[in-house]
Image (cartoon, one colour):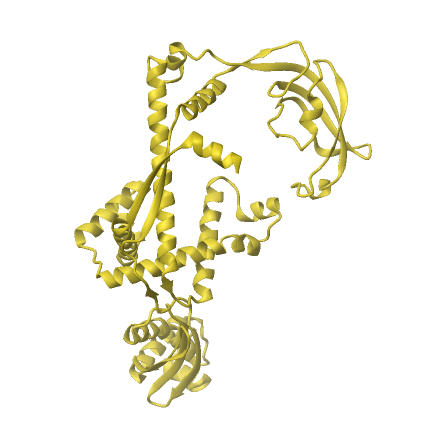
Length: 441
């Protein structure tokens, strides 16, 4: 194989003219002959025993060329890409296939390549890091959640109130006809939970055990069952029982029951530390996102649409895999949400574009900084991946090429460099005061 020429035909598009020698072509046609001879019947020869020359004499010298070209193309194209020192980001469009007697053949490959990237000053970026300071109100809110989770239901003989759990029988009718999926018996409904369609729970409030009554509602326009969207319905409801949640006392005994601590004071201290740790983590994530956004703003690159489209497909496939792990296919999810695959893919476009920009920017920074990855660092990363996936490091090496792992490590090192050089102002904010300020706005 030889690269005859490489030229830029438009922005981010390169044309390669590639030659394959007669020797390579003949070796490939021989491979194609061996692959297909068993299926060929020639008069005078047993099936699969006809010589290559006899087949070519009967069907033409180019009989095996198509299979030969398919055999040669991947290696020839990759060698040309390496010689041209380009980085394709899409499949090549191949044409102008020309065979010359005794000289092999030539072909043209047109391919979209990674864009040129320019980036402004990425060191010393000024960034504010806002860290919420956990106050007593947040700790008390967590305690309330613990009490609620450990509360017990007790029956009451009074009219139902918000937050009560009512046990009901119900059946829905549309134009006097019961509809599928609209019936339930002994259903425990927490009033105010928003479990049922809007307007239903509010009409149960005020009723007592033994009451039978109608609930008039209208299904939302975006309801997941097409036949019910925006339609009025009447539910026949019977209240069979009412229970309220009785919360445990907030004392040392409660702390012992719900945690490993012997006192309420120790439980509060632990909750505050955990909440503060989460706040620190959230602040760090927000800080890093703002920092990366600042770097992206300093980048100049004409990004090919195909790079964003490929990333969006990758994100959609990851989403489909997560759905599958939960027992749902992407097709079923699509039907349930009323969104076709193209719409779902479009939902990932914004995230895909940002991820592509991040990678391009950080790759450029890694290049400018001469970032390297040592053998020991690479081995340590394989060990980390092995621990994360619960498999042997040797298996990870089989599944994930070293070049891909190294590239990800370059990105990580570039991000670390930008982060470590940033000019950071840390603001400690009382979360309760911040929430009050936001509510006032």
